[in-house]
Length: 453
Image 1 (cartoon, rainbow, N blue to C red):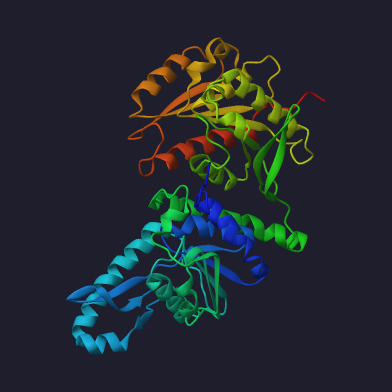
Image 2 (image 1 turned 180 degrees about the vertical axis):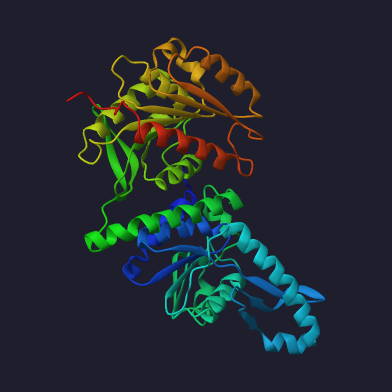
């Protein structure tokens, strides 16, 4: 993905950059609190890097009855209320009117908390360091209220951390936070989204998935940390991967005690920065699957549209990277799967049709398996085809391709989804299907994707 004047590829990238500035907090009693909804994907990356629990901090502004845009205070969970006596006095708000506004906002706050957390209880902040994370600051009012609420809930230290903010707000925010950490301070900030190449809205489903995944991570890390004295193996880093004589850029995430590895074959000229594939990778990481996202083409090659549709070339690259991964010490005992989107799915199926293909499972999201043509009957790896219900042309092509597959296979149609799965909840649904498929075939599959001993 070409960033141009933008600083962040997406919220995942922003979270990783922000986490790099917060490494000094690692090992402390930290709770990372994301502001819903857009702050939560950023906060997830920070929590993972700090090996800290993740929660949401939900605040509601108390607006003056006749001027709701004017804040006279804010409320948070645990009965916390932070008031601005000056505004209340100048606006002449009587006690009963203030109580009515608070009652109404508390009902909304409680509903949001139940919706996002489900049955999980809020993290106890008493005596702990609260790291409050958002995807950016525009006016600072919500961030300020969140800091005040965290303090009122008993946090002994409050750190406000964001990828981007106006420089002139940093000092005022230090009055409510012990530390303010920002990746990029800007003289002018017209809109947070202008600094992201992809600023797709975050859905409630994604927030719930991230909170659940973080809870599973913390649960899994606790016994391992006790056994190993807190030092957990695992990798989350940019890497250079080999494909024959060519080196390609990639990003490897390998959870501790990984139980499989999924290689991502991007389609239609996208790269390892693809926000949709990064989101799917995150869902896979949450259940202990390693992921390797890499660029199938060099930057010069990607400039030619012909290369984007050269399925044989893309398949050769995927097979080369897969062979490279199998040779790495950290992957030698792992089953390997391939995830392909668009033309990347065609490349995965083309490569899987080779007689000695080393792949244990394949998932295609919005793919073009028809472009694998005569290779389809030779595919042996269990294959899942995921298509949007409103992507009618591609759905027909997938049904035709499925009829040619002789391997174990399924076709899943995600209702209401178009080709890019941009509709709320549809990408989450696709990611869950992929997670279940890979979990079943990489963890327990008979074929390990490795040459026989």
